[in-house]
Image (cartoon, rainbow, N blue to C red; front, side, top):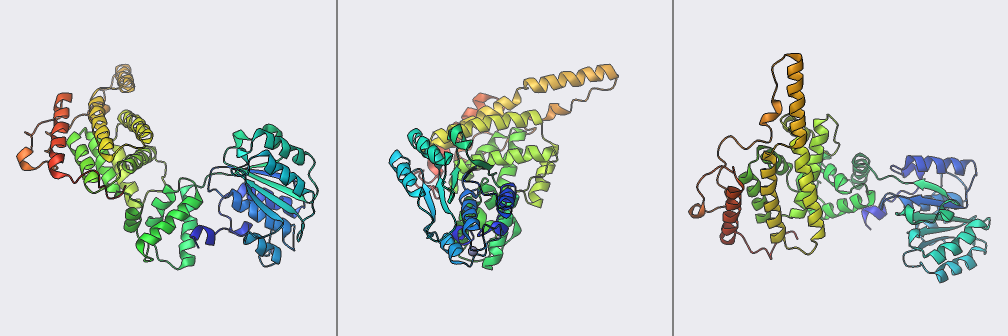
Length: 449
Ligand SMILES: [Zn+2]
């Protein structure tokens, strides 16, 4: 059994997150104010179906309707095992036609077999056709007393207003990384698996708001670690993550305009069979964290040592350059997403050329940097104080000539030179490509893709 199934919350007490929705539903149950149609909406993996099953159980538990289900009566057990005759889960994606809804309408009139309510959980309800929505609407307008509909959707904007206006609507939020990490911690403790606290952060972050996805990733990582203690190292390997120092060094090299160091990193990643799509996406996450840390905003997914290193880096960072770097790489990431069938060698070429372009652009002053400079000059003139040109040194080329890329064998190493012009930069790239033919394994055998 997967961990996600094994640890699916069975009642309101076990729920993680979605506290606002849970509290309203609990109150309604305790005051016996039962609606006939509920609509749960939110991203995937945020607990809509779990909440729907808990609500079904709360309605049909022998002690119900109650917000504290027993989990031991025949109704509770049958619902948990998905075999209750009175709780029907329908996937609207595969039952979207008018005939399906007509059949449903014919069924709702019959009284429940074993319990108080007949509960219809309709998942992905936005997939219904217009005709089906109209047919469903007729039932929602005059529902039999023993029927409760729980509709769930990831796309609320596709639900006709005639339907939403007949439902009690609950918005389900994405989980934040902290909530996800807490849940992962509970699961590991129940499983008796030792873990490093810092190992949970990358998994929580990679879940991107979906608890279900994060728990599946935990499952995957535990399979990778062979049931041993869960360490940060194993998580990084299991999830194809590069060590955070790689991003730190890369960002330092960007800030210094050190093209050789940047291209070396790209070379090392591909050499080790790493995935450039994942690298670029995680680099953007790292840059975002850098912006937040520079604004003294706590970033939960960073370990203490990462936070300290980032805070130090942020002190020397030019905000204008940072924003330009982010925009440039964000656009590149979009391009990568559209090149689904591109080979890793093609992605590498694109990334390298874009890095050359970016380093060149960073040498030009941005409009906002110029405006800021004028403002500082103006304030120096007005106050009669000395002009403070703090931003001048930021994003400037490295003071000493850049080193030869270590990727190049000595026989092909170019003369040591600075990366002052686009012509020099393209020469470096050209030589790096030549070197690659000699030193790299064939691109057709990436390790991780
Ligand atoms: Zn019960």
